[in-house]
Image 1 (cartoon, rainbow over the protein chains, first blue to last red):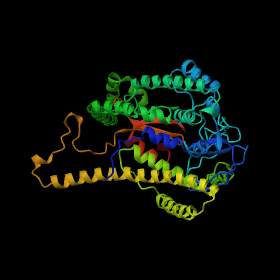
Image 2 (tube, rainbow over the protein chains, first blue to last red; image 1 turned 45 degrees about the horizontal axis):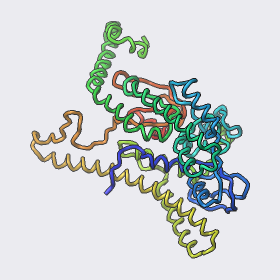
Image 3 (tube, each protein chain N blue to C red; image 1 turned 90 degrees about the horizontal axis):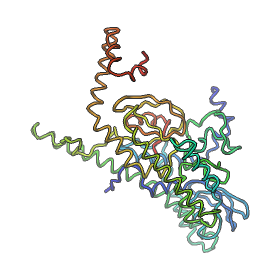
Image 4 (cartoon, chains in turn yellow, cyan; image 1 turned 30 degrees about the vertical axis):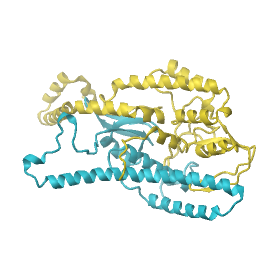
Length: 265
Length: 193
């Protein structure tokens, strides 16, 4: 019997995704490549850095076989910059995420290149784009920012410079963004049917999902009757307008000014 | 061969994704989508699931071969291999489990409608949707979902007060109805998050 889970990822499942993010480690012991289902691991040779999935880095860290290099965005100065941006520069939106893979310039992290051609068959997305390695950009929060900072602070706190300050800044950031999420609720559900949450994080979505989608679906159910009659009216007006020339347009003008622009009058 | 094919060949980001990463990305994407949408989705194409199943079987055999070896270095490799294996098994199981739950809901509805059709018309309407609460748990395809755009595309959404088109850019995370998102997800222009 399949256990029906509510739709949407649980926070534990978002953590599971985050554990597939690549992070940079400095090995303390040699480790030969291991043939895994996800490919061969890089040879670990102290003191050379290597990028490996977070779950493996945590395993090595636990056994004191490696240290984890925190991603540049997790440094106090970077987090301070992001908090400043979120509170003062652009308080109405989430700060920008790192450039998307097809436009990110691999030779110059943090900058975008002119898109030549996106891989039509397979576009990688988090956790499979390296936005938490030591070469990832500072000042830009990746999709799994919250869960990544939590897990690194919990299991590799001694690898993070000024971890107390980092912890405090992460909390600040979480609060600032949670407030934005709540304020954003006002416009949800009404309007054009598409709401952009650019820059939102994975854990923020998981935690806000029940509430956000509940609001959107609630607005839809309450307004279902009005929506049906609006659509019928619009259809009728379209027919009317086509058949009777200008008549329909005038009625439209009186009823709803906003629609006029959309319909190109 | 057209200009796109030529550009693909010279583009350093194309074809550099190893097949194992592609498969894991595809499986992860399919799992998240199945976990987050109201509807039973299409079975992943290109034998993705079957291919990963076979590789898991081979990996289990490898573990069995390695267990006899008592070299401490192999021992740690074994822990790593097993840890990863458990992660794959979790993905596969959770993926199948959420599909089964959706199947059961569909079957349940099917039984209800089969039995009910034999009853007099006045008794058929057991699904009283008064108060906007459905007695029968049907997938709500109008339910809202979150999607991430994988490339720039025009997104059309229906709303209560107005319908709208939106010029979405790669990386944008949108809230819209599943019925409006379905098309762009099927085209590979977006993924469910």
